[in-house]
Length: 526
Image (tube, rainbow, N blue to C red; front, side, top):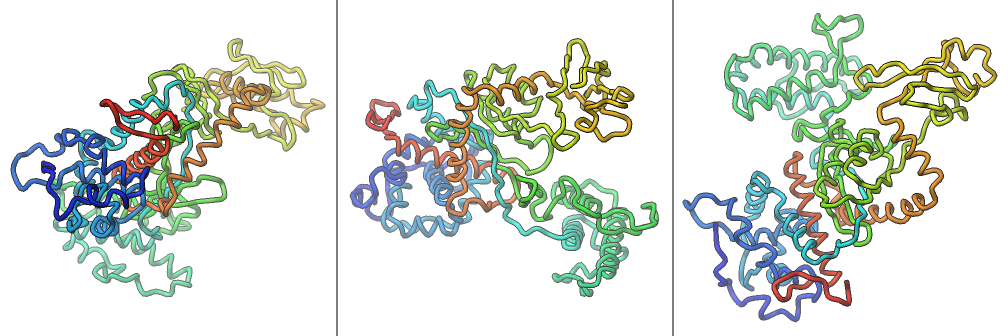
């Protein structure tokens, strides 16, 4: 690990040009406190070997990637700023004539950091500063939200994905090139362009997809039986995935005769690009779709500080807001008031947060009546302890035993609906109304009642939930809605660094300083 020895190339910028660096800026703060915020020992585990040439001191690189994330710059743009901007030179400890380093060093440092035992140590370092200042002392509210971040690659259609996946197998798997030459005839996979067909001819496109899927399956079926390395195994796995995610047996085919067509609709969790296999179609609303990842945030609404962040693929139940929200609150030392929209209001999430002692201000999902304007679930009297349900007309039936994958219980009214004067407001089903009672029903019903009738709950939700939108806007400002990296690991590391930089800027605006060996906020700004 390289060490900072205090010598610079040319005059020290901070010492000679201090008056030109904006006071109260992140640049000035890092120039003065970079060594305290990012001490050398903080990175010692990333450089376990004493062999080789000393690296660029990691505390300097940590300051660089913090400024890079704050300003939303590419590696090339970042190095240009280091070479030409006095503020950057002062913040990172470079001399006036220092030409910085090759941009590839930033990618190398981020990769080393992401694969270390503590990939989010920059965020953790700033979080320790937050804790030392006491700025969150007594502030027991946390607002949860998520936002979609666009991926760094172009979305590929079915044809492009299939061809790219076949090429990857040919390139990475030993012996695959020979197999492809004998088995794959739909396209010349050495040709960088798309197949030459009449793309406005629906039948021609269908025939091409059929032939490409057949090529993919033949290639997979004839590969030599051998132990594969990581890259080769990933290439085979991706080809198997894309060969099945967008196609289905053709009309009048049972799937065994090798005839395929593009699936009608979009497969759940569809991979959108072979270049970034972890990117997904993301529906933030019913009408708006993006391709990329979700950034999940927990913030303290008075200060706007990020208390926890996480980046996850945009699809899959394990990446849903309610599941990730539990992780965001897991490190809280004491119970908090948790604010969130309906995405966080699942029964399982409520149960887990309730058991952890948190006070919940999660907006309940609205109930949908079986008949427009008719009765909803809350119009029935449901006693889960006695296992009975009474409908608005006064008919009482027993609940079934929990069953199915989701352990649901059902109340079946059947013939009781026949001739019922309230039937038109209750159900259109010929067999009568069937009510589905999900686990944690009592928690959800109590939450809906509180949200609808408790003025104090409503006032708190309206006051403390909206500030998270401002913090989301800070996160995606300066073009940071679009990610620069591929994969969850790299983008999650970026998100933590971005949140750390924004937290640092916010603390500086609140009067952050270091005196008497500790961090604190100036009294006038506290």
